[in-house]
Image 1 (tube, rainbow, N blue to C red):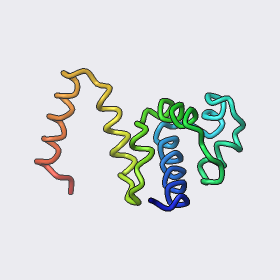
Image 2 (image 1 turned 180 degrees about the vertical axis):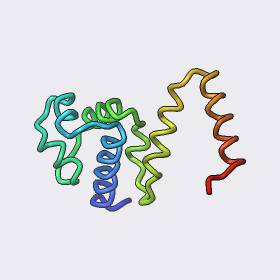
Image 3 (image 1 turned 90 degrees about the vertical axis):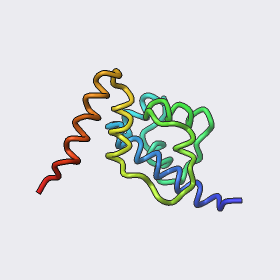
Image 4 (image 1 turned 45 degrees about the vertical axis):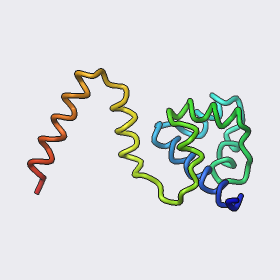
Length: 112
């Protein structure tokens, strides 16, 4: 079984990272959850437990999956790449194809 402190610490870090990627302040998240802002701070610091209901709401607010939040690996993906992936997932197929073509072009001509 994983060390509960390590799991809580990883979850806290991922919640903070997801909030920042979503472009939300702690106060905005607190309003959406109907809790006090210091509670969000305590959650992100790993000092306050998160209920299953709160965790589900946070995943929805941040646009991330519960499985991503619960991963206990210490290596976190680049936040910018994850944000880009979430934004790309929202595109229509034709628009996504154009973006992928652009990326292929950029890879052929690396910047100096």
